[in-house]
Length: 337
Image (cartoon, rainbow, N blue to C red):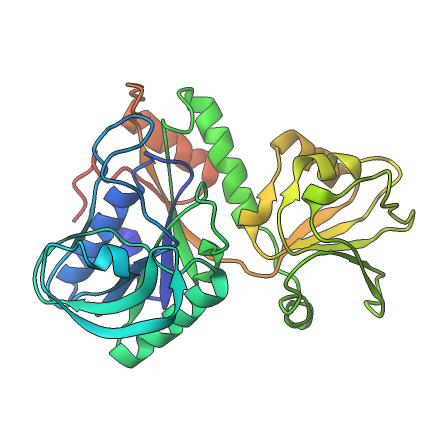
């Protein structure tokens, strides 16, 4: 598959599902097997907890992560205790997750594992950096947009997006949803100097003027924002939101009163907005920018959903690629070498 070569140009790559059952784990297992064939030294971990033996909603078997001898992986104490193959422990984290401390280990045999990795972005960055001492060329991160975690796949250098019939049973709606997600992934980054300033702000919603010489925190989160008690200035021009940007807030400032506003977020996963609202916001001359931006290498499609929906895999792949102008693959429908 062409994007395998693209992976090797990066130190870290996340494989991200737009929703459950979009083929993320199948894609990850495919990439793992191809990297093994290329004899690449790589490691694999996950953002937070990675799934269950069966999908909770549909009770369908969930694909497991397939590991083999000499592969390095990072998971929690709880899930390390349940692996079905021998492994050498390389290090144990000082910090803990709800499932225990994180264990970095080297597989001494073949088997399957549940990956439950770091639960926040800073920790994930540290894990990726630590892989250098094990002579790792590439770290794969199993991620999901639907996972409620403080960690973000945008921390990685690049990503692969998995989409499919589980997101929508209607072909055009599925294409539109995926196209909008790809547009958010491709949002422009702020300049490096502003990145350095904003990345240190861990919480809150902040406004400032164009000269960036005065900043004011207006609330802790947009979920607690109340337009009746918090008055936005008429000359509002710059907003930084450390957490989530809600659709309601975007609607509030998508009016004639506010124009040429720049909203900055940490990365695309912080945007809980709808296409119509976003487009109206842009028409006001406004923009959304990010601090962290991964390179989107490819999109993988899964034409089947647990409800029994089966889209035509060839039509889905071809129309998705035409709409996105990105490489689009169906791993199961095509015999990629």
